[in-house]
Image (cartoon, rainbow, N blue to C red):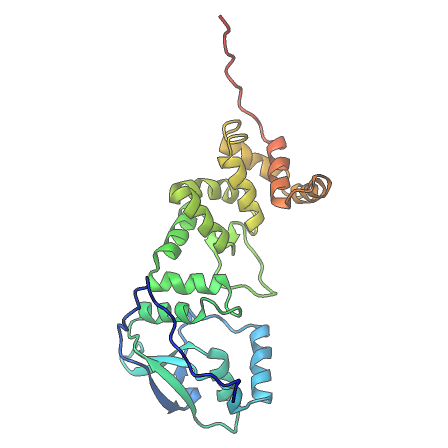
Length: 284
């Protein structure tokens, strides 16, 4: 029994332990076919998700089962339903397995859509299977300030944050999935500063606007070596002129000078950008 240890509390000095704001969850056995999913913050099941569901169905075992997390809600007709907050793949697999009539679920207190979305974010923040894009969408629905800032900055810059992607996604001009990079942009330069950087890229009609584009534009628009030497519309014009060639040139430059590709892309764009005429200093 030397390998078996009793749970021991840790030292919480300097911490302020959180006090539960809702009642503790309850556990119930329910028909998985009676559960609902809210597409405003839950992810769409793609081919990768379907493969995972098939694996769960084929190798179902209670020892591997993790109860889905649900919350009571009202549908459009005012009927009480159970919404899934976490465990969509498990629930679909159970609903598809003819050997299962009911499964245990954990029901938490989260009656409003915002609270349910916030619970989804909390359940999935550190889970590898949930993408930053999915967490961003749920955070927007939950009214989380950082996510709303990103969404508002993108909207004002004319950039569309996609809700989800898959192998068949066809990007349109001004689309992006680089929410993590944009969040960092907002944190470093404020909403207005981030908007100006994104507008330069949006006006070039990139499809999509990538993290590499954003980092390169940020360097040019904010670094003292570059930002005072051109007007933003001229940077956009350079991006458009080099739309098909800039990234290939950046890769070559990156390899030759051993710098990140995004930094090399910034240099390639800058060289093509029309420069301001600097006022001549009169020497007395």
